[in-house]
Amino acid sequence: MPRPVTLFTGQWADLPIAELAPLAKSMGYDGLELACWGDHFDVEQAVKSKKYCQDLWTLLADHELTCYSISNHLVGQAVCDNIDERHQAILSPEIWGDGKSEGVRKRAAKEMIRTAKAARKFFDCKPGRGKTDEFPVCVNGFTGSSIWHALYAFPPTNQAFLDKGYADFAKRWIPILDAFDKVNVNFGLEVHPTEIAFDTASARRAIKAVKGHKRFGFNYDPSHLGYQGVDYVRFIREFSDRIYHVHMKDVWWGHGDGSVGVFGGHTEFGDPKRYWDFRSLGHGDINFEEIIVALNDIAYQGPLSVEWEDIRMDRVHGGSEASDFVRSVDFPPSNVAFDAAFDKEKQ
Image (cartoon, rainbow, N blue to C red; front, side, top):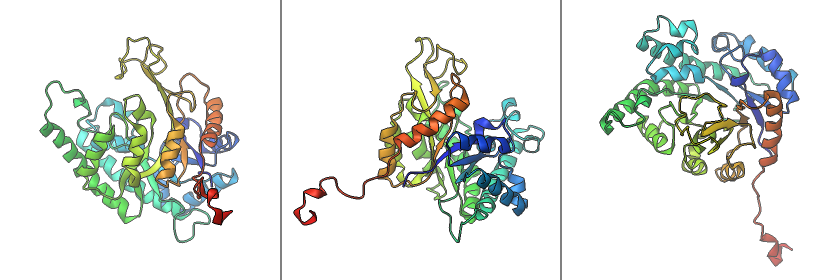
């Protein structure tokens, strides 16, 4: 059975959910991965009001859509980050408060715990759920990082300095992950530059820091790995038991004019000088067939969620094209050996 194709609503938060739902259906999607910003998923309302959860499911059902996960990247980013004025633009006034760093980080951590509770209440209301979840409930997001600024090792950065960053991550996130465990919800970190895990090596280190906590896994997104030179297919195989959700997003690299490197040169997305840029699915350099083979090999049965980003393309055109592309590359694994027909007993 093909995997469901969903649309991550984060890049569409300028549209009310009542407008986005019918648009997503018209673009060919089976469901939505609801972002916890805009009006797409209200964490506080979901925690407090069963009616809010039921009404949101009704809205989705009215447009023949479903949901498998929610995402709270913006708040998660503030849990470990060194806070500056940029964070005020992505956080609610309640979490930002007076802007003092430690207070912001602590309020963000509490909000991530509330997000787990909200997800549990929302998915408990899923029509036809029965006694168990159809797919393990996952909150996708970011962790932030207190050591991202030390990416390049100058002034000289030793491992003891980096160890402090992973210890800070563990101190802040283990209580959050424990709270996720209490309500039977997974956290899927989108491995991504600026996070505590941004490639395979740092992902291993993050798992070790939280002592292999079973609720800590990954929202797999190849677009953040490919342009770095990371083997994005190997990532699936290495962390096969921690791929909790999958983003389908494309990227190209090596298309600039040679004046901007992998770090971006302080240019904006879409600048033709850039070495890399996010692209609509099928227009970049990611090999999605290899990804599907690897997902089949690890028996991933969850949604394939399109995170659509391409500054060069109209998003409705791209979003529609992307849903078709995902269906074209996804295929179920075989349940029979291809050469089984050679066995005379089976003829």
